[in-house]
Image 1: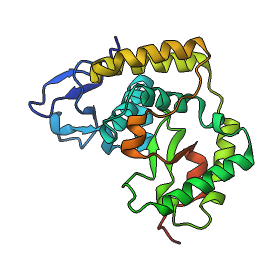
Image 2: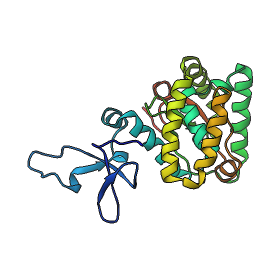
Image 3: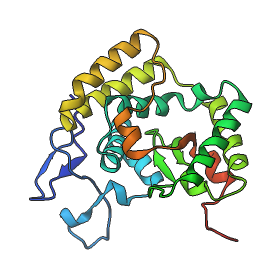
Image 4: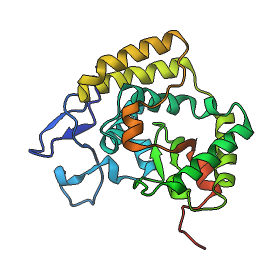
Length: 243
């Protein structure tokens, strides 16, 4: 059971503080407002309103992983056991499993971007999605890039560099899966047994990469790459910026 006393969740209905892993609606942390303000529920700010660097400094690792899982559950409520496993796996091992061949990686990017351009309707997605609780890795959605003629040349070098520098390990994967199982038991109990079974089977064969579930793939049609957040942001301004 994960117990983190300094960090409490407040129910949106009655603002009653309860332990994080028992009932979790929104996670709040104290933020200094001014010297004359009294401490009250209004003196707390939700984690989602803080900058990334603030979240990383203030939150223990386990809480940061829970915040990643909560973000994805809020955005993709149909995620299944395989999708939770994939999320954790990508946060540990990065994109290395898809970079067996550079030319193949380029072709795959070209084909997926071409497929996006043929879609009649694109889903509204974030450019980046949280992945690694340390903030090192993100899912870079390709949809916001599909109109750029040089999208492949933008993404591929960052993807290759990320694969080369990301070195996950079985111990870290096991620890994060255990945290994900605790979260799943509380938040998605109907999917807990499937995740526990998948985790056990995967551990026995060295934590392989897995595909998204058919439910997730059909509902959300994900098209992304796992990249280093730092490398991507250093190399490219967000789409639409100038100067």
